[in-house]
Structures are given as structure tokens and as C-alpha cells.
Length: 334
Image 1 (tube, helix red, strand yellow):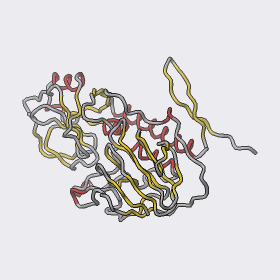
Image 2 (tube, helix red, strand yellow):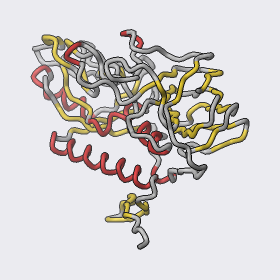
Image 3 (spheres, rainbow, N blue to C red):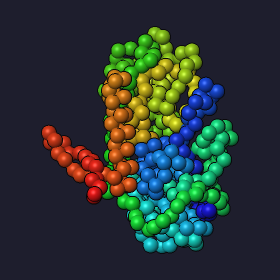
Image 4 (spheres, rainbow, N blue to C red):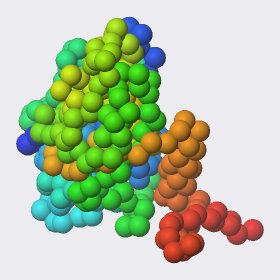
């Protein structure tokens, strides 16, 4: 069990969400940044979709009431019993130990994973909090959470090297999109504006949607309104004021504004980690390219999991002037 001592900002239990219920009006919910959350779980030996804590900007202080292994994903100062410790690393906590998680220096969301995950009531197959529908609630000081069963056999630390950690420090991001499906509701000039302009994430953004400020996207004579259609995380709606709104993990399941594009699945976490004031540019790709980008990202995550399990090695290579990380299998002796 863990006990929350201080909760300075939004703190919820999240997992990979509840797919399959959108036809009933239930949003997907789940990790805002599934890339970081899955890595946090891998560091403590969990499946990538295990329930963990997601915090906004500043993390909690909590007390362990039993031995546990934990890891924090995010660029924040961490202290265990007052002693600084590293993020993106597994740590062993004993009964009575206190973990303090500071504010994020970059990015918007951070994650705390525990070996065995968090035990919670699964509603429609998921532990993810979606308070607007009564599915879970934000956590507060004094709450106690039970951890799942895990075999803690040793104190060997798992460490994610700097070159493998996601970097959310940039103030400007390129986000790839697939155009459509309501392009007939926009002029050619409006589409050019959307793809050629810089937009800024506004403070009105939240887990439901990110509102962007910048040049207005011009609608055609058909206007901004459509007969209500399905929405998914990543859908970019453009209301009558011409300012794009990107649907996020807690987005409603249908909407009546024309949709100019959809952020590709592999880039949605980059937008999720964009603080208010971050500048965003959109670049169009086709469906086949979006699918290949997602496959590459999944291969990277799978390789990171194997790296943390000691099954692969990571090293830097440079091709055509571009540096990237490559992985090779670890050959077992004998």
C-alpha cells in the first residue's frame, strides 16, 4: 500500500484506456503520453498497459507502507527520504520510506510506476480515471492505494540511458497529420493556412482537447458545422472562429464541427506533452506513412523493453549525417 501525503496538482490512476466503448459514448481515456507511461512500466518489469499514477506538472509526496520497486518517468527532481534519486530508473523502497516528486522541468505529464501496478476496480475493463462520467476520480492527500502482486527478488536497478529518454524540452514541435475527412468544408487557402502556419497551445487545453491559437483556418461555403460524426483522439476540429481544436484522450465520442485532419497516433504524445505557449506546426502525411511511423515507434518501444530486460544492447550510429539509436541482441553464453 502507498499513502498520498501531498497532491499539488491533478493526479489520477491511468492505464491504456477502455477501447471498444466509443459506440456507447464512453471516451478512450488512459495515458496522455503512452510512450513515457509504457517505458515507466517497463522499467519496473510491468506490462506496458499496467495502471500507474499520472501527474500534471508537479508530482505528489507519498509514503510506502510495504516494500516496493518504483520508477518515475519525467524530467523532475526526486527525493527518497530526502536523498536525491534519478528519474527513469528503478528504485527499491522499504516500508516507511517517503518519495517526493518535484515539478517537471519540461513536458506536461509525468508518471510513477510500481512493480505489480496499482490494484483498482476496473470499470468497463480499465482503471483509467474519467471523472466527468464518474469513472474514477482525481486523487487527493490522504488517499491510500493498494499495489499489485510482484516478486521482488533483488535490488538491481534498471536504468534508461539519456539517449533513450523522450525529450520534451523543445518550444516548437512538428506534428504529423492525415488530412480529412471533411476537407470540402475548407477552402484551399484554409488548408494551406493550417499546414503553413505556427499555432500556439493555449491555457484552455486539458485532457479532453488542446485549443490552439494562430491564423484562422478559412471555411468554404459549407461552413464549420456538420451533422454530428464520430471523433477519435487526434481529430482536429475547426469551429466557426477558425482556431483548431485537437481531441485528446478524454475527448467526447462525437462532434459537430468540420474535421480538417487527424494527428497520427505516433505523434499524439508529443502534442500531449506541449505546455501552453508551445508552438506547433502541422505536416501532412498519407495513411501508409502514418502506419509505418507507428510500426517504427512500436519496434522502438519493444526494443527498449528488451534493453531494460537485458536482452538487447543500445548504441549510437550516424547515417547520412543523422544520429540515431540502434539495438542489437545480447548473445547468451553457451
